[in-house]
Structures are given as structure tokens and as C-alpha cells.
Length: 168
Image 1 (cartoon, rainbow, N blue to C red):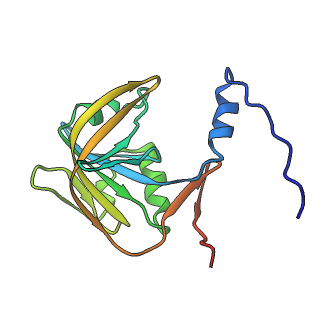
Image 2: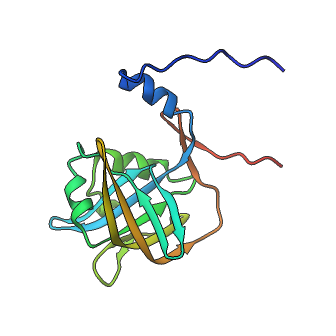
């Protein structure tokens, strides 16, 4: 086995270099949705994590610079959709556009929150807390409902979407 490449030091004053280092951590890919004044709204996020099982809490972190920041930090409810390995186009579309629901199979929760069909898992959340976090916010949701199906996740690493290959 070849020795690993030597480390490159990330200059913390260089956002691109820091992003390169952070990009070494593979994450799942989600689309977060809410019902905004203008209608259903979505955004791709890979900053999703479980926080607590009792009570059931999850978090995600929208960028303050996003035009969609306000609706997601001012809403009462939102849904987090964990994407499957065949949904990279859905993820790419919600990176740049928030209102592509006319191209999707979706429904609404009782309160109007948009729910995208066909995802690997979905967490319907009530807003629990918002914390300042530099150029992002940490949005904590209390899970009020969850669904899931079998399948492989869509993965994001090094600025690219990819597939998970388990060790057999």
C-alpha cells in the first residue's frame, strides 16, 4: 500500500482552502422545504444532523447570504428530505432554484408544509430553536413525524455528488 499524500495546511484566512479541507468529510444530501408567503420553497442542504432522540431533534444550517434564509428561519414548520442515490438532479436544481415544485411529485402536510415524494427519508419538523453561527444559522427542529424506505443515499464530498459503496 502506498503511503498517504502529505498534508496541505489550510490557511484559515482563505475560505477556499478551508472549504477544500472541509470537503474531505462526506455527507448525505437533503432538501429542506417550507411553506413561504410566495408558496412552497425548497433548498439543498448537506448540513443535516441528528441532535437528540429524546426529545427527537435534528438540525441543519442555512447560509445567511442565501435569498431563502428568511423564510427558513422565520417558519413554524419545515420538512427535511434525505435524498437517495438517484436524486442528484433534484439536489442540483434546489441549489439554484427554490420553487421547482411544478416539476416534482409532492403533497402538503396539514399545515401546508411541502412534502417531496420518493426520498430515502423525510422528517417533518416544528421549529424548536435557532442559533447564530457566523455566516450561517443553526436551525433545530423537533421531529413531529418521520418516514423512510430502503435504498442507497446520495453522498456529497469534495464538491461532488456521489454514491455510497459499502464494505461487503
